[in-house]
Length: 242
Image 1 (cartoon, rainbow, N blue to C red):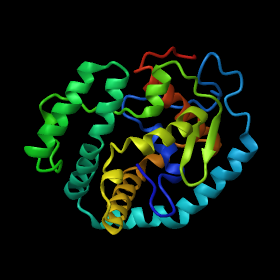
Image 2: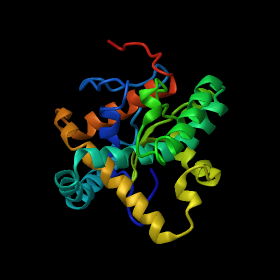
Image 3: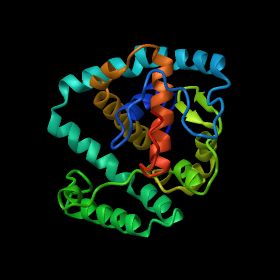
Image 4: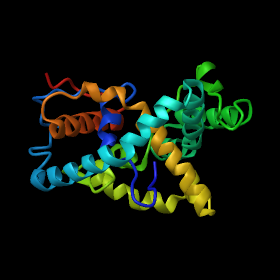
């Protein structure tokens, strides 16, 4: 998901990790995410301050809008909107699966994009999933991890939410790759409307999942994000720390 004029995923990026498909659930007393990471959060005081800022922005801007959206938009319509933006993300999955040597997954990505863009009416209907072609979720941060680049310390980016040094840095080459609809749409009002709709739709889908958060909100979101990123990079082949 890309940046709107002033925001993108805010703190709810952590909630995406909490409820990530096939991911792992954060444990409140779990403070590590990889065997080689002695201290995954060495900049915690700064990160907490940025997290608090992001959380405040979300609470007073994006979350209220998402609540209204959730109330007024019928579920079939919101599902169709989610399907459209998921379909627009398939080229990113295709590129990164190819870079990781996952050619079978890349073939699935291609088939999904072609089927949903045609039979699925520009992605409104996810016919590919119903045909047994499950969606992959890949980005360049995962590709770097697959290539052996360590994640580095946890960081919280202003307005962008949870990340790591590796994943934060991966945003730079991704911005030059131009494999998302954001880089392909030159008409600014249209682009911002699409980004805003995707952002609100995603935030609305996470409203009920906030109930999963227990204890220290910062720690819970951090652990959920780090555990889920390890799960994604290793394609689910992670050791149970317990």
